[in-house]
Length: 313
Length: 265
Image 1 (cartoon, each protein chain N blue to C red):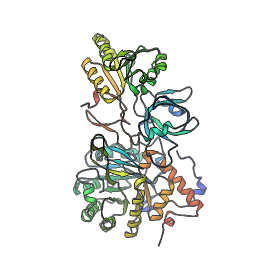
Image 2 (image 1 turned 120 degrees about the horizontal axis):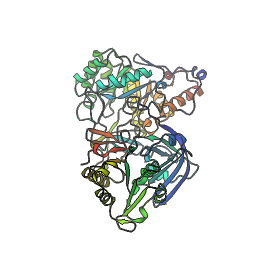
Image 3 (image 1 turned 135 degrees about the vertical axis):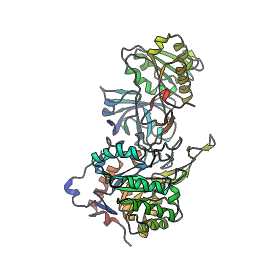
Image 4 (image 1 turned 90 degrees about the horizontal axis):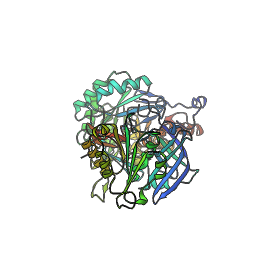
């Protein structure tokens, strides 16, 4: 649990509520997909209800086993991973994890991924109208699977196509998660906005690798992996700044955020909300500490809302 | 799911280099000590690390837990930057501690446990041995040479039978732990074999040999595995290893597994 709690009276002086394309959240601190399980894996360690929302581990139509090990490797100030989207599949999620999340009253954004446009459409249809699902985050940017995922996210046409199909298939707010592994992220962001996305989240991990020089082979079983953690934060911040100025839909900042100061930077760059990922793996209570620190910063500096933090040229 | 884990800053009481690069750290962590069972582990990060490098906590098995004093012990080798930072700590300083994590060993009521540890594999076995007061059982400890046989004193105090072996013959039997175990099992009749169970921790080749031995002899075997981990708490799915039915996660379904559930080749 967080070390200090801001009392209600103080907290009422600032409005932490954010509107992410129609999804209204009590605060802008979210847990990033792939670093918080389906919530129950963290429930004894933090108060999940105090988070703006959790973005559950990416779900596919069928369960996936994931990549062969090794799947992770620590790098300077960062973490390379190639988990390979191991997940329980949508049926299990609907019958087991989702009811639990709903009972707990945890705001839930479901991250979906597919091999084909049809699979994205089917997932959106299946999740539409289900109690407990607050929004979808469309993963078109996972670098760790051979087919699907990143293939959609690196091309403006296919990114727009997936977005449109998902948007038409359901009435939920649609957040599209963007890949940094592209020449011009703003081009993709604009295409996705035009196709009907309600919000964007960025960045997914940066494609990287490591080599074991003693065994003379790549460290990761998948050869390539996605780099996350503080090492990528400046890249993520730059992309959030650029995209926030290129589109008019809300942007959720992700990438190495580990302290409240990092979060404030992303809000100043133009993010409406942020997601905490790798930092939760290092310390499960990071998101609570960030929320507390943010509120304290805003009180001390006379900010009344998240929107006031944005740097406006 | 009824997980009882605690994320806290623990006060370091002792941190002694008992052999070159091998440390014994004692911390005060009351809540964890009350809930820990033998075979479980904790994730530790030195508070001497200023910034994000190294980034992740390190998994260490619980060497000892005392409910009365609220103390935990960790036996660890300095292998990289994370453990190097831990080794620098002095009493009175603090570490980030998350635990207890994962599954523990499960000794059934009727079983005669045989604990088999190679090298630093003794780390989780002392806690297990101390949890079996008054029970009949055997502990087989092996190392390359005499100076690498660790923690013999507290093991002897458990009252279990202790068999020692070194590869160079500098102390106890000359040879591998598997040879000692093989002789022990071969001398048992089939009824006795049904009642013994092996609980083992050590290098992967040793565990593989023990698994095959137990398969041949028809003896139940649990092993404690070690992998690289990021979160240690079931969030990242990074510590997957191949098993009979797909992958298992060492931090969640393990680190203690029934050996016949794993894929050994």
